[in-house]
Amino acid sequence: MAGERLRELGADLRRLAGPDVLRAAAAPAVGAILTLVLVAPTLATGVLSWDTAEFQTVGPVLGTGHPTGYPSYVILGWLASIVLQPFGEPAYRMNLLQAVLAAVAVASTVGIVQYLTGMRWVALATGLLFLAMPTLSTTTASFPVSQVTTTPLLWQLATHADYHMLHLALVALLFVLLLIWERWRTGDDPDKRRLADRWLGVAAIVYGIAFANHGLAWLLPPAIGLFVLAVAPRVMLQWRLIIACLIGFGVTIVILYAELPLRAAMNAPIVYGHPDTWSGFLYVVLAQQFGGSLVDPWGNLGLKFASVMDLISGWLGPLSYLAIIGFGTSLVRRPRFVLLSLVAAAATALFAASYVNAEIDRYFLVPLFVAFLYVGLGLADAIWSSFWLVGIVARWVGLRGLPAFGWAEPAGAAEPAGAAEPAGAAEPAAAIGPRGPALEWADRYRPAIQAVEIVAALVLVVACLNVVPVRQSPQGSEPGSVSLAGQTADETWMLAVLAPPDQGGLPANAVLVSWWSASTTLWYGQRVEHLRPDVTIVDDSDRVDNGVVTEQVWDVYDEFLGRRPVFTDRLQGGCDGLEELSKRFEIEPTDLSNIERVVSRLADPLPVDPGCPDF
Image 1 (cartoon, rainbow, N blue to C red):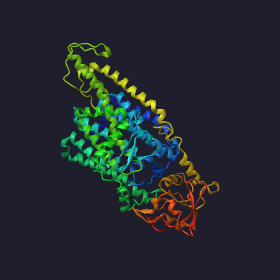
Image 2 (cartoon, rainbow, N blue to C red):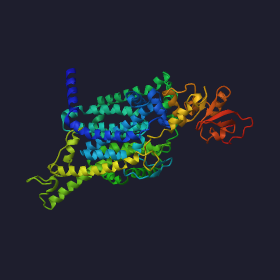
Image 3 (cartoon, helix red, strand yellow):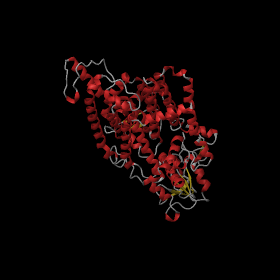
Image 4 (cartoon, one colour):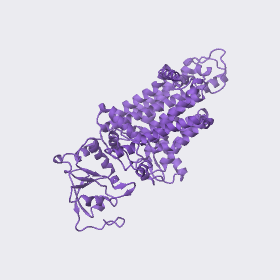
């Protein structure tokens, strides 16, 4: 038995190293390399702020992030911070990881389009279109609880650490695995049918990684389940397969989520909440902090649908017509893929349209990914269908030979019975699965199909390259610019605040009462760069225990005034903003940007806003 399994493993490895697989991997590999080459010059070179700075800190020290914890991304970030050490400081390594994940997403996009159409040039162009979005038009869509404006989303998110990019890469990889399983399961090769369910087991593990990375992955089971049932309606009777998949999924999420309580119990340098207790673990994993952020998901469905369509149209521009063609042809040629992709995109878009978040555009990555897949499928099917129609018309008018592009029809050739997989698709398709049946009709038109494919793809690639200078311009300098390479303001500010006291930094043993955007940047300086451990940074999240506010900002001031130098970095508005706090405390500016010193309580306090507690 062991010898047989070793022989099977050897055969599988030889198949993976075979010429068909290597030939099929060429286009996705080129797409990944081009993504890295184009995105690398636009990466942020250092620490930023907000959630980006948090994960630039949490990843290198293997801490725990804000809800839902994102253990998959944190662990991957920790590994990347080790493997990518030669490339720069920890903050940059986390940004570089983002570019690598974007390359995986683009490579998967190329692979899926190539796998479904066999047109490697069209597939490569599709991946670059997804990255560069040359036909982008600025559109603002209004949802009941938010607004979203179109930007070069994939490239924009590829420039700095963000867990949404890992979510996209894993969803794209999951699509690839499920499509391979479908072809092997339904193909004619008995050996592949016998081994097909291994791909489903791998897909279960990948889904477990996605599940432990982002809550959006929790929306995918309907799409996955419907696809699996459409491919194999009797799969529910294969209880061993189901149990194996559930075990693979369950073990994966247990291992990954164990990072939260284990690292909290080990006193990792940065831990959000108290995931080492059962209530604290649930508070983080179930994102109870954001419990009220999902607003009326089943309401205003017409408005949400129209707004999502406006967004997709803005992102695609004229490419929307190709996406419509691709969706229409796929309903006939790839109905199971439509089921998988459409349900996944719709569930994600519905959630995003009903969710309150500071940067909700990131939640549309998967619907946008699906839209660009249909762009590639539409272009490929349009090329194929045009030649099929030419063949039908030529036969109808009795034209027996067309001299250009090898259109000559061999004598005695049988008339094709109908639409079939283009011959040009067969070789690339064999990259991941078996070669589909090729009609003599398609073989006759192969050179012409490939010529038109290359020309169409080159036109789109040139369009992508034309917008590269714009995309690589400093973010905000012109519409569509995304580069963060020159954005050093956050790092400069952090180094100034955490500089030694004799060099203008905070005084020794100072307490700084801050808020999320600034706190995360300072945490990086303290816990990754090991600057000024004597300074205590009190963030708003430090004053909350499993959703219960245990201490107000003014309570922290009172606790340390007279004992340690107290400083603050607060927004103006709100009961705990500078406007209200200045009515009860003497607060004076400092030479440090956005940092004020809290001197003492006022002897003659002013009345606070009636809506605020009397502190």
